Length: 623
Image (cartoon, rainbow, N blue to C red; front, top):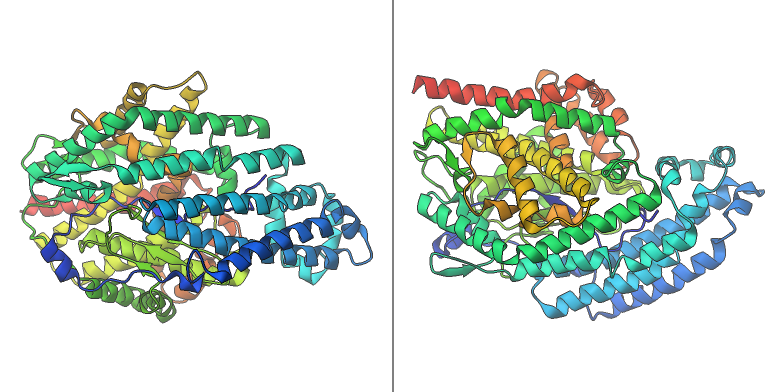
């Protein structure tokens, strides 16, 4: 398989619900915001350093193949055994870092302005070159997996090779699904013109879309942001603009969705995966039964979570049911406040520092060294992410900051990823990367710390109610909404096996799943049937979305442990982050007395959300 060679990853994306738009006056209130400096990777796309590294990567990849291809069995059984395999792994790891640095620079430069044709060409050209280079490396994991188990175990008596045991054991899990070398090479080389090309088409099409709201032509991000306006008419107009443009382009997005679903089905069939999501579970190093238990627990909790909350919110807004554009509307009795960038920085760093100074110190580096790109710009990728790049460099964070509490939570979320990635870098290029399910733990924990800090600084009354409501909505968006997304994907990929799905059919499935998850408190008006179009996770990372619910529920349980036994917790937590991808989720959670394989684990995490809704209902009863 090719999962160990990534040449076009765009980092860890957060499914942030939109924040309200920043007017010219609000931009002034936000203050000066950082834009990232990519020179720590390369001075520019035409730099001699980049050209030199590209050339070196090509030469070293060929040399690596000449040195090791067809020879691993002999090395493993030779006099040096483990030491010889360790040297091969060290050479492979160095190449991963070099290739990853080049890929990271290209994807970050592109994300900063996907509308720039020069950047788009550069990104596409780099993808093609790196795919050609890494073709020389494909043999390594495949050949390594053909080594006899007993031979590898004997070789790992060598200390240098034993260090790579977690990577080797992860690689061996992919053994049943790997194909012949030439087929793997074909899959790898065609990824640029297959999955990669359709991903790029989606990105560039979505970036180019324009939506007319209030006499302005807006890109996707600020249009979505209007759904959080305090003005009901603005929210409705924005939803209509989104529906209109999505409707005009739904055939294209349906074609992209159908093509990628079929592409995945072909790959899954060749590799022998039984279930449509098994390849994602394997990449996440999580058992299908664990994910099924999470999904079942959330499905069962819909009436106690989203159904109950949205009925309550409809009452607050004086409605029988919320229109879909009112779902994330601000509460009417709380004045909107713009939180400037420097205040947001202080809020998050103070929250992190109260937990442990080390976490705050690492997070502060992101601000001090311009590892964050915060302001909205035309052409910039929507949403937010933290890109880990490579251990020899450092992560970069992309935001679209507009000064609302949800933006502060997004900053806390992405800094959680960033701190995690910095700490895990000690594991090196092959073992620093964390499965998505556990990667979301650090980000959601960072959010929880920041939320608790804000809550502690807030008195009773409307402000507390608004803060609690905002957190409940974020949790519902992270748990209920993401599991609904996962259910939608499962329906789409399952039905795609019987032929192409029309845009109308995709809309029908979308509405069925959304009605079930949101409940009677939300009325899905005309036009909402096309809102599946803009969710990037469906395109870039099929079945990614359940990782968010996994992380949210896990953190809720983890934070409860922290509240009950805070002594020594921070040290164990940082050790968990430092482990990177070297431990299974059962090993990582054991020091906290938690086990995600326990059926009751997910109920415990969901109970935290229920209790917040309980408090909101109690506050409402007293009013």
